[in-house]
Image 1 (cartoon, rainbow, N blue to C red):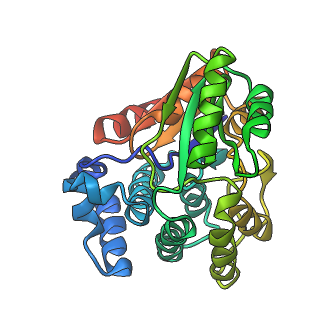
Image 2 (image 1 turned 180 degrees about the vertical axis):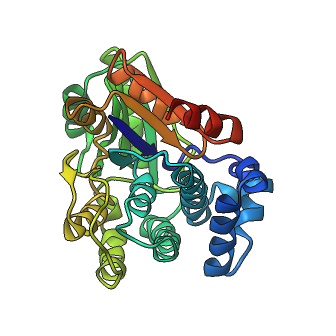
Length: 307
């Protein structure tokens, strides 16, 4: 069985989606729709940058969504479909568009607002995120509790065994980073993000997004989704909507998502869209399974030949 997985923030780069746009009508249609819905040339931002605009979260989120959906549409037209879908953070929206639970137009509008709400929730410079390599999740959870001192710091992404991202107040993240080094972390790396995603500081964004998502039409899923907030299987429209609301403050349980799909019989993971960040995480989490990515015409043809 095959799972399509969709990347989130951190996978963006100028030029993403351009090769598919130039080669496939299905991809052009997606980018043209995105430009029209958003009222500016998202396609030009994806293809040309500049990087400093592309990395602004209100731009990154629709850019990655459009690139992923364009890639999916090209594969779909050629009969390459998944048995399951999942997406990392923002990628869950791409997965739900692929599954038919939400329209591309609605998803573009929602994620543009999601980016704005997340940026507005915490003033620039107040929050931070850092990747911690080489310590187990329970250890990191405990040390975050130990150094919080009334501030917020907690695991935000469980990406793969031994790769955890923490988020919260800048000073608390710095204290947790120092403690992680003392406890034997192989690497602690501050991340160049504009806000501390997937922690309780995002509560104002969650509440604003809830209002938007409750007004957004959701349909039944044609492929089951493994969601971020609980790493559980979802096939119901209301469960999908609820999961998108909860994931704003909840930890991304990507390790759990990957393991559940493997337990369900997935033996081929295909990363859909920009980059191959998720491919690396999956390889570190489950061994011996096929992992690939699709972001250009050559890779499309390779997957068509494989069937």
